Length: 189
Image (cartoon, rainbow, N blue to C red; front, side, top):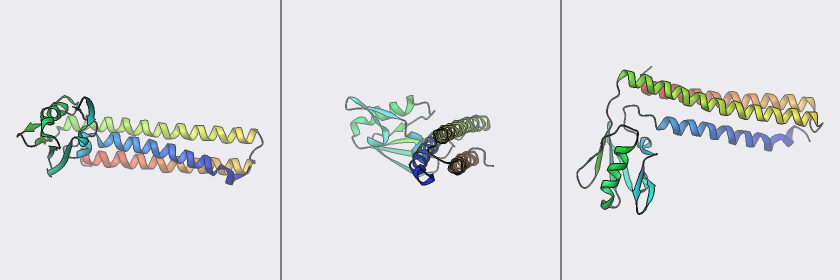
């Protein structure tokens, strides 16, 4: 076995690290910034046809104004269920129905709430970084084990450890960039 044989392991590492970044990205998309964003409603589940369905599968969502989301149900009989699902979500939104569509005003955030959300974003980012670091630890242990079993050379182990560290640094930077972007939206700096 040589360094090229480790490519499969690096592919698996990249997949696991990418999954951590995607998780952070999704979590941060659900943090309300005071601006309308349909991603905010991704976790809203509507009781429809005897099952719980994501809001975006029972209504067309649009943003006609910066602080307003409009939900247009595909089936008008679901109007009440959609309104109820949005109201009981933990998003603090108050939907208004006119019988044809549901208007969801996005209230502006207080400074304290912005800071609280920023702390939440930092926690999400740290959790993502911890997942990436755990993937790095797993990979480093596998490389050390391969060296101990004489399946790779010391040079291959060193190259492998360097590549794992580079992947880790790249993925941590992506998470840091996500955090900075979200902080910019929340705090404006």
